[in-house]
Length: 408
Image 1 (cartoon, one colour):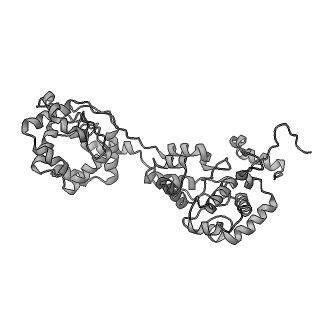
Image 2: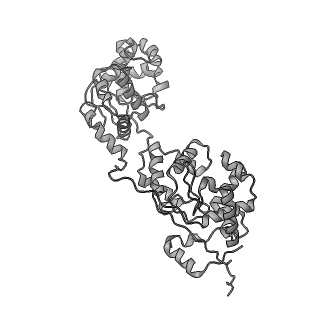
Image 3: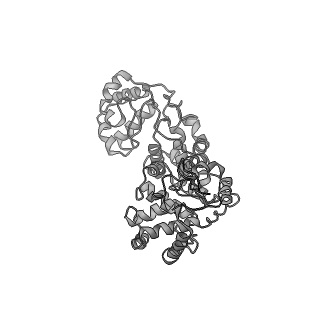
């Protein structure tokens, strides 16, 4: 069933969103089940309104604008997408108690009409802008560099130590670095100077410092090694199972030793041996080493080349939205009838959906891959961004098949 749209309305729709003109022609044909809501007639839209007012308005609002936390706005949403999701609830591909219970008793024809009705409504208003004075999210690496300035005097500006007895911080997995800082804070690692330093650094700064050092170019410590590296290679054979054959660890919880300051490594092993450092997995191996073997092993690992970590530099909100907009349209205003509009959606709903994709409770190969890389802060920033974008309605123009003339 084709919709007859006055030429002026069609022209106005394209003028309002010129970049989407080519995309406005829906995929498929009027007989395509997935597109049936796009082709609904005014009579069917009116029937959809009656059904929606009886079954949906209590949660989603009288005009499809929700005032309930965790319940999305439906007004102005893309018709084919709404129909697809309603069918998913009825088929239990999506499970949510209230929705499943209501949709179960509606025919597919009713679902088509409800989807068409909500798509025909004026979209909701965007959420208000962030309060004045709200600071933009800082770049994590730059924030880490600034926070690490106090560490540079001992550990080197980029985490490559030039001070014997002081560890290099470059090429350490962020998880290990954060764990070490927590151990200094709690006193599990006994070092009064580091305990005082760690106590004055916030959790977010620790994370940013860890990221900063992890992304620096790896280099060996600029310090001498007292032992025999060749003898140390043989003595270190038992260490490779955890720390890697050449001291490059494959486990975030186990530190890489390649390129580390030799004096620091030797002192750490001595502390595991004496019990000053607590780690059951290290106590046994360390107790079997004499002073010469410890120095030789430290010299061997100090001579090895540290390797870059597989650590991703976090994307900014702008970089994330550029990725999201590729499917959801500029500013979250999708021009694909099968892809939802994000603009002016409820913030709490957007956060909820992203968490559902991250945990796998909502299934989508593309969305799961994208959301798996998001931090908690990324989720909040993206939800706020799209909720504050102005929503735009889209009119889909039904074109005749190729070679067929329009009726005059």
